[in-house]
Length: 196
Ligand SMILES: Cc1cc2nc3c(=O)[nH]c(=O)nc-3n(C[C@H](O)[C@H](O)[C@H](O)COP(=O)(O)O)c2cc1C
Image (cartoon, rainbow, N blue to C red; front, side, top):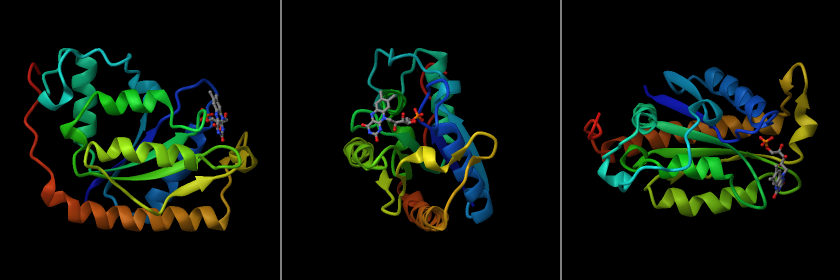
C-alpha cells in the first residue's frame, strides 16, 4: 500500500483551500485505499519563486528548500491537488511548486479537488492538465468540483459535503489507487539529489 499526498495549493490568509483539503483528507482516511496520507500545505512549504540555476531534470539542487521539497514529493506515490481557480486558471504558487522538480513527479497519478464560483474551478483543472502532461503525470478523470464553494463552508465545522461530493471523492480515490498500482512499474528509482 502506498502514500497519498494532498496538496493545499492556495496559500492566502483565510483561504478556503485548507478546510476543503481537510474534508478531503477525512474522505481519504475513510476510504483506506492508501496506507499513508499526508496533507501538504504549500503555505508551510513556503518555497520562494523558483531560484534554482539548473534544470530540475538534473536534480542538481543548490538550496535546502529544494532538497526538502524533493524529499517530500519523492516519498509520495499519488497526489490530490486541492486547487482554487484564479482568473480562470490555476494558482501561481502551485505552478511554482511543480516547476521546482521533475523526476520526483514522473508517472504519478494526480486527482483534483477544484472549487470556485459558477465554474467550480473546472477552467483551472483544464489548464493544469497541459502542465502535468509535461511531467508524465496521469490525471484522474473522476474529479471533485465544488461550485460556489462558500455555500458548503461552516465557520466552526469546516466543509459540509453533500452526497454528490462524497461519492465523487470515493470515485476519485478508487481510480487513484488503481492508477498508482499500474503506474508504479514505470517510475524511475531516484538517486539522492546532487549536492544533498
Ligand atoms: C486572485 C483571485 C482570482 C479569482 N478568480 C476566480 C475565477 O477566475 N473563477 C472563480 O470561480 N473564482 C475566482 N476567484 C474567487 C475564488 O474562487 C475564491 O476567492 C476562493 O475562495 C479562492 O480560493 P482560496 O480561498 O482557497 O484561495 C478568485 C479569487 C482570487 C483571490
